[in-house]
Image (tube, rainbow, N blue to C red; front, side, top):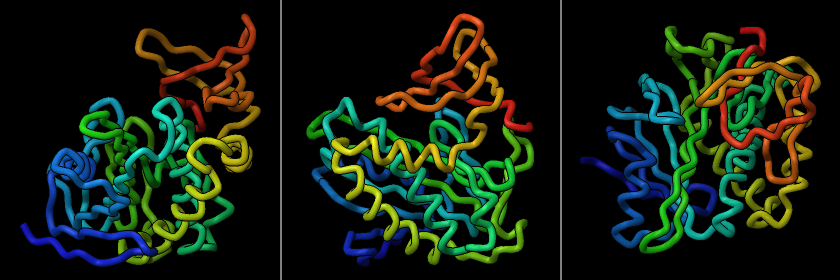
Length: 250
């Protein structure tokens, strides 16, 4: 397995040719004693995954990256990294393709949309032993996208923006440093929350939410102080901790 160690925005970076999953590799390194911060990237993945065990199609020319962090916050606040990373991905895409900036929106809890279609996804995974570590996995469709997904997808090239994975990674690494500093290990999530809501898809509109046991519709009211989705329906405002938002024009 070929890999190359370099620096990326002041953070170490290991670039692989092929991996099963950048998140899986980051967590395996953490079990072996790696404490990061460390970027792991791969040109291709053979076992990329998304939330809830779904497969992440890993076409060549796209960005597959994971940032490994040790004790980035108290464990109870670590889920907020979805919003931190989402803002960083939004920042990076807007920097690399400024003409697309107005069409970019963040979909709760961890996707970036371009023109209402999924452009990027985030997977946060953590382990507590031998230390509390978090793998922030990020996939950006730079050159290609799958066609048979539950939520419609797109890529930058299809939108007329030619951005290499290397250029996207450089912008993302810079943006992550800034957003992590803004977050301050969870102490300033209120600031992240405000910025995220400014870019939120469907805010104030009717959305559908899919939970493990049921689906329901309501008006997207915002986020609470913990990052839970607030949906207003006939019975009042319901906070949603984990679920899938759809019905955003798809």
